[in-house]
Image (cartoon, rainbow, N blue to C red; front, side, top):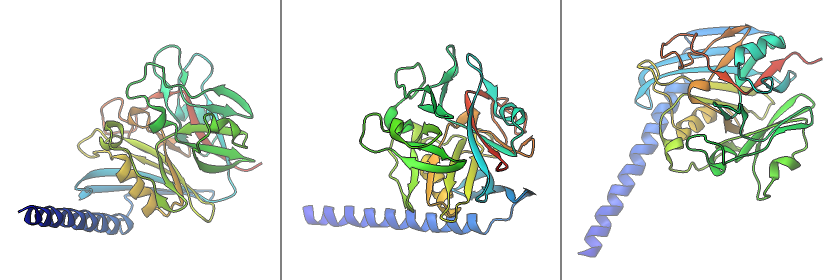
Length: 289
């Protein structure tokens, strides 16, 4: 009897794995063969926007992608102390070609980042898991970082040191998470609500040729369901990233290119470009000096 039950359970497990792999293969073909509905180029940076109508992850999706070739200068920038500022404003103030919202922050006073932030060698904020931020967890949202050294951006995975981020050799450091992809391998995603629920998502990745990839997946709209972190990992892998990191998402998810917001931020609950949320920090792209 037990042998029969075990055989049935094994058969069900194999069938589920087969269906999952088949769905992933179908999704990968759908994604890599998709035609952009909007595209733009400036100084070698390429923007593409993709709209999927029920055929990616069995859902509607709207995905914005910026591909930034090697040679551009990256910066972490912060809002003035005691304030929050839109990603587009931070970009405009420094004449950036492109920008992406950064890491997690406190939306109530005292405003400011709640992950480790270093700008031009100066520590602005430390990792903090005690602030009143919903679903806050160091293990989820602080297990990776972007590090900027001499203007080049790198994606870094946390090691076992308690204050690992303080030992990163870089001028700018911004911790975030979860880490999605390291050295070409998908990172397992914890089965918690933050990861498994579909939300608007922001991610940054890097290819082996030095190209940096910015991604925003819109969400909370009929036209755009948003994704889980596992689905976001797959998108970053299909875009050819060797390393990738999840950044702050939800209403914060904002991509700016050539002076315009090019995704559909969700804070105004309209599928347009006007729903930008003010944030504590952002990642900017500028011409190399």
